[in-house]
Image (cartoon, rainbow, N blue to C red; front, top):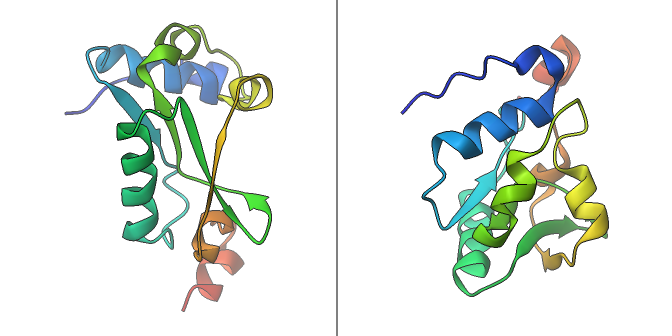
Length: 122
């Protein structure tokens, strides 16, 4: 399914809220960033298992640093739907209990923002 975010120009929060609205009946969401191609499948699966196990918010950590993807349980639906602006779901991560998931996956921290970043992937 493709969901359009008519308010995307307002930032990541508005885009994320549009995605949540398009899948409101979901039991939870895994928010992954398209510019992070080195995240291991096992990391995504581990985040999903933690959500299935009842964790309200799950974030992977590598060497003490929080990364992506982040999982949100259905109890955060309303808060996710109210997001706007360019901070994404950072306010939730800062104000709610987050289950820390230590992973051996440096890809959770590595995003591609420049042509140099892309060349460094090889």
